[in-house]
Image (cartoon, rainbow, N blue to C red; front, top):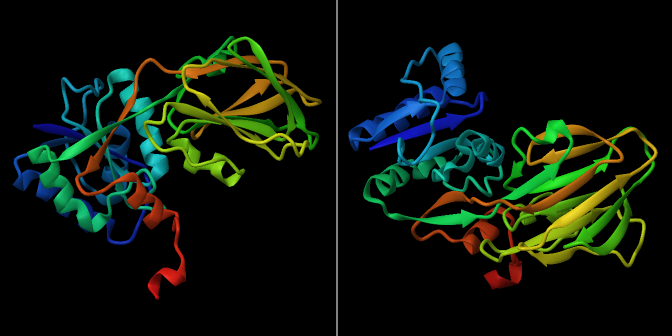
Length: 292
């Protein structure tokens, strides 16, 4: 059995000792591991740790899974590494919130045993795909969390004209628009008033950012729909984001957002479900009256 390991080049207290302990647990269980090249460069530079580097082809044919060491942003990075291969990803949380990377540092031994014994489930998370003539959006036009378009060059609002399967939906006079997957519904969309959508709900959420119309509210649509948008505004460019990747796009751009043809496969340990994550990470339903 062989796995791949990825992380962002961040420094945390006692990380070297933790990483050595983590990799030793893998070795003790007979699990071979290799490090993504960018992460190995960091480990070598900062901690003088040398390991075998992953081959470029991160697919299920070559690896059992990819372990992401970091926070939610680190997991989002892995999408551009595994691309459409659907290689399962396990997130070990070294950061703060850890909504996607919901396995704690102290649970690493349980995680390693789960990988060895196959004692886990896989959640297939839907992805967004962007279709556009804008060259900067064509290299890897996919997102696990959300697509966001927002004003950039001026303080004036922008107008996003939206069509659903070719039928006019709305003119969004606002600071921008978020289109999120169920995975991303607990992120930027939620902070802008959007609803929580459970994984597997087969839906997208359209959430305006500071809409200049009190009747305009977030909308939940089937993920089988295609959303076409036309962007207008006073500035020459707007900012478009796919997860953590941002691009400057001409204001008059036309963009189509639809469901991707492949999924992002997340590993979830047995005994851990989405509702546990909501309660533990977002303090969902926390009420002191429950303690009485």
